[in-house]
Length: 129
Image (tube, rainbow, N blue to C red; front, side, top):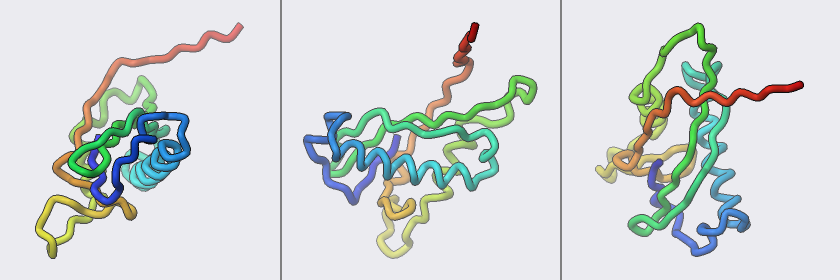
């Protein structure tokens, strides 16, 4: 998750079918896609999905999934800190305002709000007859 400071929360963001939720979700997903498709983990990056948007200090707190697909034979080659570092490195902080808010492809993201939690061992197996 991270907090976007330059977008005001709207009640419509609570409804996942609303135009407003879909619009902000699409924007965030495009930004995350760009970050990870141009990173060292690009060959493992699958997609991002916005799960929830809530009000936080006048901005938006965006909860999302980032999906990486790794062949089992490769083993555990990256960690949550590595994935978080790529996202944080993509946020260009401004020296002028001396805050933790930086620009991530036009979104003003509070770098101190970036939290990534690793979920391992989730495997979806689809059997086709």
